[in-house]
Length: 338
Image 1: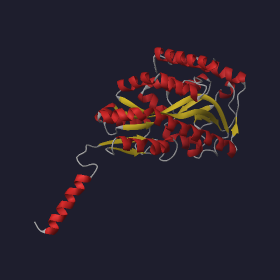
Image 2: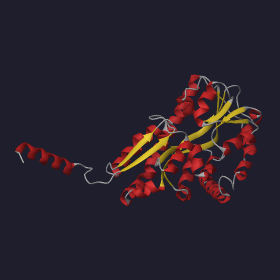
Image 3: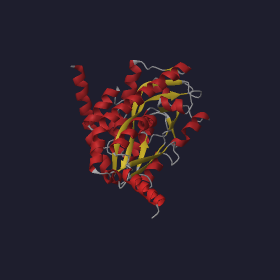
Image 4: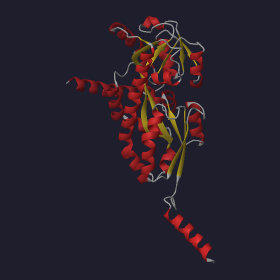
């Protein structure tokens, strides 16, 4: 072998020997989501979670995210996970409820009063939801928040039960949202989530339930006039992977990811909640009118919708799961009063 060829061979050998990926097994997770890259929780997951995953797995786990619904809405992404085309998904409240119907229990109307209660239930019942996810063939990587969704309307303020009567409400969040609107006397109009923004722009609906960040991101502030921030429901969002994809990782990687899970989730949720509040304040500053129910109006809204909690038990979630959640919530509230 000539000297130049020998030198080239030696350099190639040394390069391969020194490469971090030399001989290492790698994994690829393809993830679909409706979230827009660098907006909302997608931005914070990208900034906080992805570097941690890269560090823990020595760069051997590659995550390819298909943002903005290019692979479809939550339902379509879930179907692609089931077929093996995708290994993961970033889901809104709708998708979380489809993938794990039991998660509908945390989306009941007026269940939570604040994020402290949400966080307590997340911690107290994490194992319950993890087991359900595993039973369904998935692993819950990060349980984030969509928001405490607001009541949005274009033609009239929505503060009393009577205000909902006969009002066309666009709905995309599933069976529970539709039942909630019907309970309030509204007229639900079911559409796919991909059609929501265009329906609002075209004036095909008078009202909706949704997060402020969606109004800002979709630039719907010109079509919506009133916002009622009465915490009508808490909506989760979630990053999940198939159980087979999760279990394919080495145990050391999985254990390290689990060790960082709680801290990363808290960081992401804090950032998401801050974004949501800033978007809400921006809409007020733009001129949208804040609607505040009186204590009597709030009591009537809660009394009207409360029967849904037990009504949906048995179809969306077990009664025992609801009972356990309510017990844990009552204990937490009692401890806060001491």
